[in-house]
Length: 421
Image 1 (cartoon, helix red, strand yellow):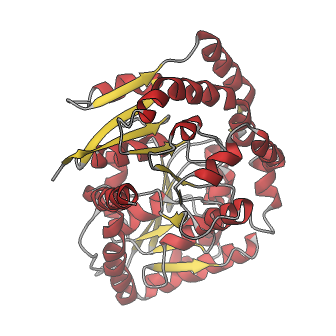
Image 2: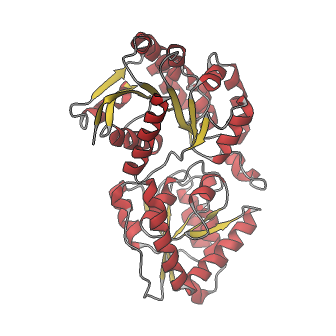
């Protein structure tokens, strides 16, 4: 039931139901929270065309961008989108775009916050914990909530080649974050900061000497109720493996293909492996599958809409995802919601979402170690359908708390607690 008495100012620079990743995640949060409390959403004008289709009678304010910065962003894309995207450099060069948004939001809504027009201010995006929020200067008597923020996870040792492909050498640019005016103040004075991972939580606690009362764990990812299935029954002697994600080096699709190639031919004949996604590594992965002798069981769909991705989740038996640097790992939640046991590296977000009861986690000691262990665990699950069934049921039970409606309920409970305090 909606509580009209609670007025939330929600700032989401990225919020878009038609895009993937952070913009879609933010929209799903917003969509469910606005059912429960009165929300004024403040977002970037780039999201307007998509949000107007689903706005209804809700209040959304679109912050305009100067024509100069629009031209600047086009230049950034030319510099950073050459083959694989240089994300560290793009994040660094894009700061002026966020900086303008941040300044204009503060100018417009600062006086309204000081006039106590809102019961709480919640700033959720950007997700990366590198950005100041000028609105905090106006929240002297209004609770200020930041997050969940997530990021900064390093590559595990032994994956230097992958790190180089992902331009990890540019990560030194993060240190300049601390020099941005207002950055330190944002984290030192926020009433509450939510972290999307244990790694980021510990990083922020150490960096800003935050006590437990001001920082908490709240995974940013969730799933739609449509992704929640009934546990799978396994009567076939074959097993369908699935990978869903961008085809970039750190996602590790090549390691899954290599793992399949090491299995006996008698085992390979009982497997199929579907790779859903697109990216700069796609052609090399197709060549690898052929060269490794598993081209007949590895199938590439390319990019497909999320509704079609759901069909592949439902047709599959096991989610095979060797990503070595996943801040969150929403695809693992989607797979678990569809009753798929997950085989993943025990690192960062994937290691927090997947438990020993819902899948198999492997320490990423090295590339060769992951390949060997993925092969062993694929064969193990193929030969033990009873264990797959138990994992399937427990996976579905685990992700129910991650349904967007349940996450929104928990967030609103936090709002109420902060407002009372």
